[in-house]
Amino acid sequence: MTVVNLSCYKFITLEDRAALKADLSARLGELGLLGTILLAPEGINVFLAGSREAIDAGMAYLRADPRFADLAPKESLSAEAPFRKLRIRLKKEIITMKQPLIRPEDGRAPSVPAALLRKWLDRGCDDEGRPVVMLDTRNDYEVAAGSFAHAIDYGVKVFSEFPAHIAAHRDDFIGKTVVSFCTGGIRCEKAAIHMKALGLERVYQLEGGILKYFEDVGGAHYQGDCFVFDEREAVAADLHPVSGRVHR
Image (cartoon, rainbow, N blue to C red; front, side):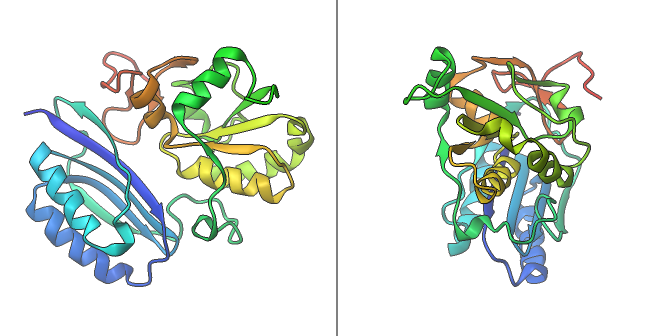
């Protein structure tokens, strides 16, 4: 059986997390889905694996809740499920930044789709001729698996270290177009909002993160693999699991 691996998220206020956990545990468990779902006051983060039929049924069930109707999943395939069980966890944040004033639900930062970003990188500047800076918002061990060529990263151990680095290097980005990126979109969305709050004008998030970039345009301007948080450890630009490589 070919396994479908799905990831998606949404920043949306959740006030019924305990009930939602019980509900999703029961229904997704019935479908035989494996993976991890994080539920926090700020939203939901979903990683699921299963058969095509089970994944489609699970997404249909999630989208039946009006809060999740517009979930935009990213998919990849593998020969085996990269999870051993289904876990639904209650968290303070779906990605910990420790910046309570950053609320993506109140308004997203501008995003750039993969196809447009590739055009910018092909010619070395954006549509208005400004230099484009790629900013990796991931942790150091993720960056070690692969990243965009010439991307800036600060070697952070945890994402909550990121704001201090941006504050220290804010002036490096003045007059440039900054594209923050991460695996699937969550961290680079928070990072872009934070940078806008610091007064940087031309900051974008890579829509859907590296995984969506791979899905839409392949590995152009990307070097190496993309670390993923499951037993595959990393996927190549064709979104297939990387075999024989150790990333941590």
